[in-house]
Length: 445
Image 1: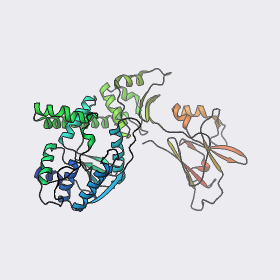
Image 2: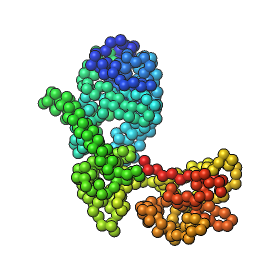
Image 3: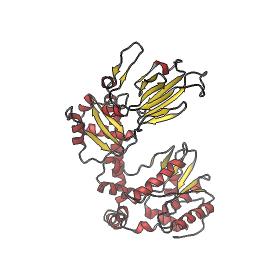
Image 4: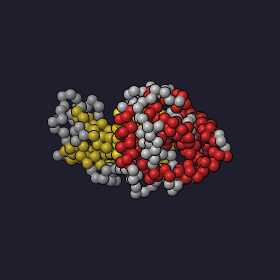
């Protein structure tokens, strides 16, 4: 435990600290992310002085030897301030990847779970954190989005995250904390230079700040300039989507090919990010997109990302999320919601007179096995399903996953639906022949 003193609420705090806190956006519930360290402990003191109904949230990652001591310190601090505290213990995956990233992912997952509609979560990141973030991302070769640093505000789950002290240095926070007798707990891992960010903090930043005393303000200025550039890039992508995108979430190749290389890359990255997917860190985006555009018709080029890929088929680019396709036929029961790849299937009563107890034939869902033929009407000849799907412009990867729905009766098995592309009149909207209506919906984002 560092420093110490009376933990009662104070009425006055320095204007450079309480000023930004008093200008928070309106919210239903106000939260402070409380780690127990200097920054968040001081933030809770200041926020509690301005907002009587603030609540605190402590995430115990259970990674440090003093995690129980830190949790107890947070409980005592909140008790002294009269602040309601919620403690969440998380299990951080330590098998592969960065431990820091895994801990952050676990922490933010709890944030998303806790925040309600229009709630606001305050975090105590400061100007030094921002400078370290920008420099760290610069060394990793990130673009202007990363060099914009941490945003002061952004959406998070149902609520929003807000950082009121990005313009305040850590030395200023420590000065005020010691003057006011605020206590905090040091995280032992913050001193280990095994972690890249700690190396920057302890071995690089002090020399840079000594050489350039205005470093934090200069970095903040550059970050804001990058943020403005990213905003313009996003706006350009939105405008170009109007001519390049379609109502199925695809990119049309003809107008897309007319764009410059940088514009193509910008639009595709915006497209991916808009689907809530991580943008791949490709070394040569222009080359990858050229292969998609100019590969021969017998080739199947693609750009692979984490949990998705981008593919070309005929005159469009498709963003294809990675999904699991069920193996083997499955029965669809009345009232059941069946997830099938990119589709959702339901069997509901066709009218109010139909009840869930009413007799329903067996409805079976499967995928293509090859050689299927289908009859689109009682007076029409059967057709090859393969040929029909090609005529409909269904991409090859979707044909293999498409849910084929059949009705099984004593007379045999008959197709009643092909994904969301076609449904028999007996099971379509308003039909009473079967007494049941089949609903097949496609996730098109």
